[in-house]
Image 1 (spheres, rainbow, N blue to C red):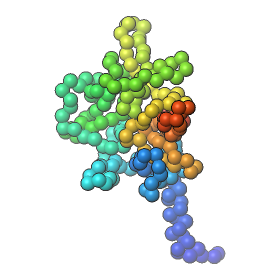
Image 2: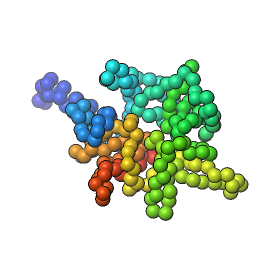
Image 3: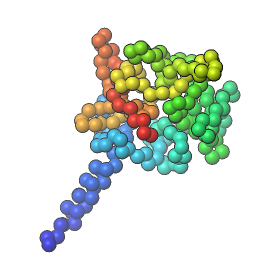
Image 4: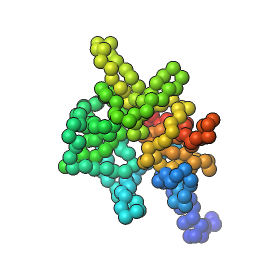
Length: 216
């Protein structure tokens, strides 16, 4: 049997590795930078760490992440919670909510997390944006979408975390949205929602929801 040269073997291993492990890149004004990586399989992403901003550059540091929570790209940790925060238990997990931002316990401090679909709040955060999609109205703030709801046993209005329908347009996406390239096209990923940048009829820039990853 013919032996494969060592160099060819190494190349095959590298191609195989990078074909399986897609990598995220920071969003930079809608233009692909030299550091932009390519997704070959959007559904099979796996996070290996988190980015910390320091001295104008990002460095990656693996951290322990509770698999029951979802985390934003940047691992933000605070020692104390905002004074008027609310504590909410959801599916047996503690969340602390204030001004559209969600936290949970992290060692002896608190870390920012993303709220799960179905999570409810009583008051929308200041600065939310109303988005009409067909007959439905969504409320958007800090990368999270809400719909108005109420329970049969109570007339109290609640706002429930949800996913937007494909085709939803927003004027700007969260600053932590990550730029990805799929089949040579640039998309932006945040909070399990994939966007593409489009131009509206009046010539302005908007971001259109093109895919929802509800499995994570």
